[in-house]
Length: 488
Image 1 (cartoon, rainbow, N blue to C red):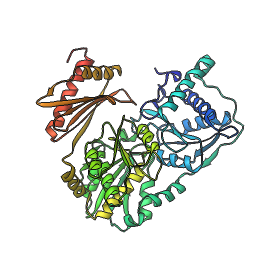
Image 2 (image 1 turned 120 degrees about the horizontal axis):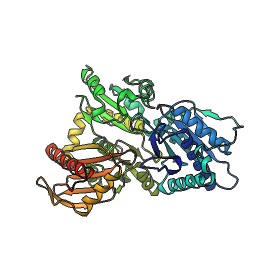
Image 3 (image 1 turned 30 degrees about the vertical axis):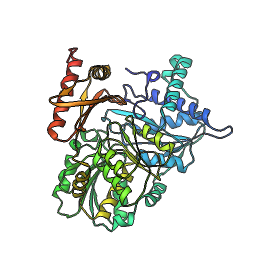
Image 4 (image 1 turned 90 degrees about the vertical axis):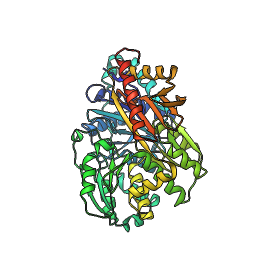
């Protein structure tokens, strides 16, 4: 079992199984460490202010309350959301409050048995690695100083009351500055929203109804088990959304899905076909560069489609490639002018907003794109691929008996990469994050352990579906061999 003083911040925050790795004692200990770290960094005489929010997971409100009570007792001013909120709404609220940072209780897209903590800094973006390393070190220091008491993370009694706040109204105002809401309202689109029982429920649907768009919502009630499906907007998880879009008689329709904490977007086109996050990212880049005539750096993670490379080059835009995790994209965003940043999992951030992915802003921008072009989503995807080539992509997740096996697999492939896989010739090997085999035809296979759960992620993109399947099948056989102790 992972005890609180051995916790680790992964791709985005600390996550663990509720009542196993993720406990109230652990939350209190991390809250102490975050308070100490932020207080040390503030200007002398400046009182530390932290915003805290939570998603719809089991016990999330109580975990948030425990963190708030702990930090209040340590002389930190706290603003706690009145109810569940998406992570990007809390992130924007941090900037509006001029807070020093924020804590979001969420495990994002992870299975229902998980919960977690995300740390945000004053600009609303994810805490950089340098800061999370300081927090981890402070957890270890506190654990060593307090000994057995660290497991209970005892804090003094709270004497000051907590301030509750609703971050939604200022966020709604912000949306009008980012997206042409009037154009969307005139589009006569019909939107089916699936928040996947997560924190975005009710928010996007009400926004769209408020501007006159016909909108309905499914999976929009509290269900901490998420209907038995991890709240990740992948095609395999959106069958009911696709069915509902298909059966609608409306001529202009779209399905939009958000992950558990509302920072990722998935989409279903008018035929009920899943549109990948890669395709959404590419469409939004194309829209911003051509219709809005904006410029700036384009940022993508290591596991994101080469369509982005081709589009950036066609518009004369610089491209930065980062390790996987939006915190790395945020670091590039902070360094200079950028246009858009995105990742394979559906998280996208745009210029003029916070350095954070935002599923609701991405959805509205996609609707703006459809309203501007006057064409269905499926048609826009086909036109895009006529410009940048066909996009055939799939991700496969393998459960690991021993998480270290994922690292061992990557090490073996990096040391002794195959020259070819079923006739697919390997031209280059890259190891920015995991191990990526790049083919002579421009396709690629990426092998990488998850940063949030004991899972090995296999990613592949190639000119044909048969090649994608072949690459993933080879990597699956290779991984099975490593776990069984055989030389594949």
